[in-house]
Length: 413
Image 1 (cartoon, rainbow, N blue to C red):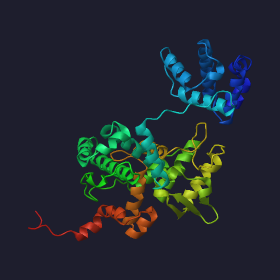
Image 2 (cartoon, rainbow, N blue to C red; image 1 turned 135 degrees about the vertical axis):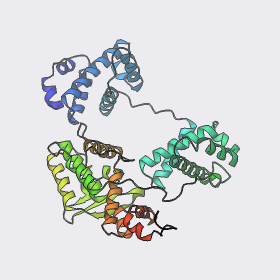
Image 3 (cartoon, one colour; image 1 turned 90 degrees about the vertical axis):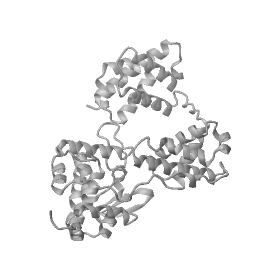
Image 4 (cartoon, helix red, strand yellow; image 1 turned 60 degrees about the vertical axis):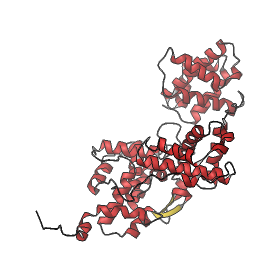
């Protein structure tokens, strides 16, 4: 039962639309109905709305003065007496948005940003507009840059003049071992980019990016985790394609396993990216690069099955949507990674270092290499910018490596 069906029968809704908050209740109910929320979510949202308004007005506030401040105070009060529900805060955010769309409450007050945050915000805009970085990458750059700025320049802009190479080096030495070697290397890259930006924009007069130490990492030192073809097929066969979610997850896994797309690339696919006439799909890759790839017949069949029998009705043009209302696209590739992890667990695949969407990309490349494909062909399929990114798979072709191995001195022992 969806929100519309529930509202037509709900005694709670009838009480609200004939009560003192009738206008608010009608707008909120229409919002939930338009978004296709289910019965349980709609009932809980209306019950929460009633409790909020009773508390808000009971504390001497006018209904039209409702804002985030009052919502936070209400939830703090509520959580002292009832167990919090994970959907409470999002339900009340939906309420405030609906009321503001109709002009029933004032617009949200601007969030006060510190001087550090303002500098990092502008840095994020620079990375997005001028460097073309993805939203997730920009977010991680802003987070690391803000931590760096707060620690080495607690006074904000006034402290930039005191920045020296030794201060930068000391910061890296303190935090290089906070995580793994890879995270330490990433942190150095962000600090280097941030200092380069500060010098470019005139915040600092001395070019300090060059003094950021490098964390040594041997190129091609590791091995990519991969699955043999039979295990990939086992994962695909384990999908329950009798349900809407199963059809969606199967189509996602087919794209990962057969086309080698990254999680973020799958999450951003649109209906308009598929050209059914030519049998191609447009992929929006890293660094705002786009590539047109042939759409395999089996992958296309899985997508069609999902669109016809699994995809919810929605105005959103994203190919893959949330099964729970509101039916919108995923905000990032994390949801695709979660689908991949769930599929591995459901198929009983264990004992691998990585359990995510990228595992299918490595598995496809390894299978192609062992089937005789060249590095150039694999790099073209995976859309690598450099052949070095593809060379790592050479380590996985054990039979060809045996041909290159030298005999052990002294013979067999």
